[in-house]
Length: 334
Image (cartoon, rainbow, N blue to C red; front, side, top):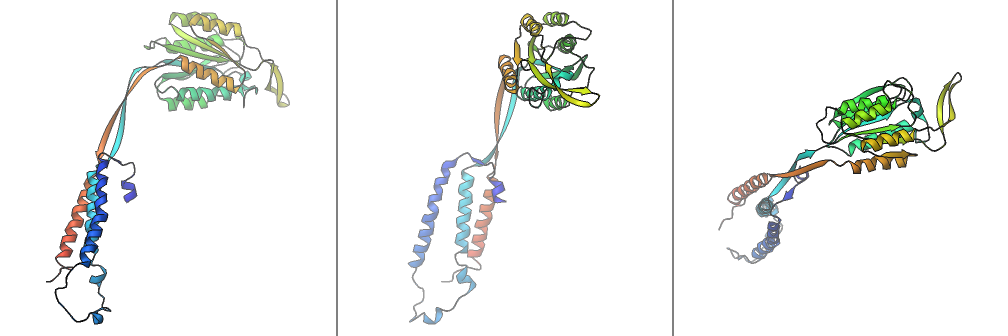
């Protein structure tokens, strides 16, 4: 119980702990005084009394011990034990960001660990955790596009939606234009001064109802910056493929339309990146995180709760008990 009381305790006036130096002085004075006491009655010998013991003799210093404990409580109370509570207020301007992630079948290629899609989900989750002040959403696309999570500041919900992304949710294909257009649509009514799309894909546009160039022009109209990421190693990558014999691994050629991705990024004021492994993908998101800084001011307020009152009550109680014992059970007669 005592340890729980002092958990997270700080002291406002710690210099009062110097007063603890008087406690050993009091103990020394008490026992020195006891040795110098003069007997009220002279007797020839106390030999017959040396074997006489009583509970009063055993506990004769108990009132003095109570006084020392009470004094210790008073000293600690004077040092003002207190608990600090910190409150923060956040003011400023965040950024609205849509993560546009390719979920086509080729994202299961295992040139990343364990595959491209799981690596993309992992770095997306870390990116969200590093941007607590921004509204972030997720769009997924394959042969079509779908809003997995609209813009939100509830990042726990957002992360849960990212973890649920998997291949096969949408018709297969790579509709880059549709994915970008859906992301832009989610940002076009945003009041934020900075609106960003991070588009990640590992292939060439081969489907969808909206051409990537058209989606790019729409993004420019609404002043939305697009960062593009091409995912895949150079050359061939082991990819699980469905066959009549089941799922087998085959080396598939990595084909990324880098020219298209570079053009989308350049025209919208963003930047194109190429990720060939987990490490480079992590570094890309870190760089984007560094480039897109939120303007946020955090003001901290400290509130203190005083904890000396119980110590004062304990000290008063102990002094009262000492006085009662001194004039009753331990009363000295002249």
